[in-house]
Length: 408
Ligand code: UTP
Image (cartoon, rainbow, N blue to C red; front, side):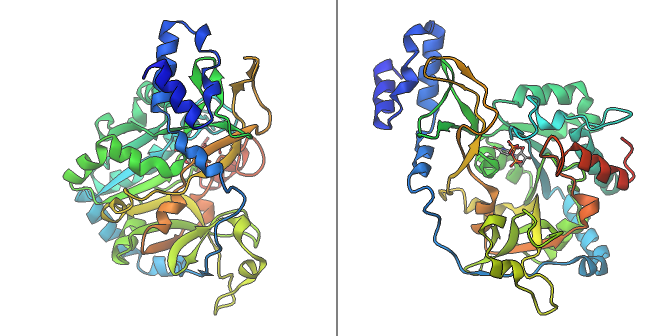
């Protein structure tokens, strides 16, 4: 792309300021900035139009979950089915490790966080330890796909190599990068990270399937017989992946997706709740729930919208394929974005200073016909690390690990 082409492209979307420092860059810097302008998808900024108007309210109704007593009753047959799928090579794992972890405030990839007290215990190590419990029982390995971003790819790969993949066979691990999206000021102007670099950030946890497809990995998986993808977040140190009972249950109920879920620990807990929206599976954000929904009870007198998701899903590939051509909504999220100001001075914000644009996995669930909410024991499977201190922090996760007999 030439300078003139870049300017025309930017003027058309009101972003010509991105060339403000062009003349100050050396030749390589100029070329690189033009490349970034060519590759950046500025259409995400359209999400700012009509922001705040909200989406038309759907008609919500409860969805039935498979609860722990029912799971325990059928555990043996579910596990048998799940192990059979694992041994037949029908399941692969997708670790979502492309996030920035801004709330945690570390510049390292989250998987590198050491939560140990008497020895190093990294988040990645915890995930692989849990996985190896299953693969040892199955007598075979499960392909592990790790989604990184341009920001943390190299450090994630180097970290895994340095730790010999925590004992997992490196030939079973594939890395792929997720797509990036520009970040903008509150005025809708794309920010510069420095004079020759557009501020880009990973495009949200809903970008994984299209990124997997674009990387050519999806076709390879299908050719090798993989039918199901267990997708999970990086930051839950009790995350149970390739869980044979969960896999078997989703297969037995013939659903397009299974979602591990925990019972809300109080009425107003800030978790997205599984439900039906206009008769289709959906996840309603806690801030979208009305008092009527929060107080609704089922025929047993229990909260009707009681199951929160923990970012651990089992997707059927053939159903997800139909969503590849769908344009998912772009969500606008306020975040702290390091950038330069109009004088070219660096800004390191302590509070949110602009918008990032993200695709969310909840919209993929909405696009599918059937979902099995699968209840897990919260204290055994849910120890997220989101914040530096307090709720969902290293402290709370350590406490939960200790209660599960994990030596830190
Ligand atoms: P979060 O929503 O907690 O986001 O991600 P985050 O980026 O890790 O943290 P904050 O909000 O900046 O503090 C939930 C999961 O989705 C992954 C994360 O790595 C985590 O496993 N994720 C999130 C991605 O893989 N890519 C993204 O663009 C966003």
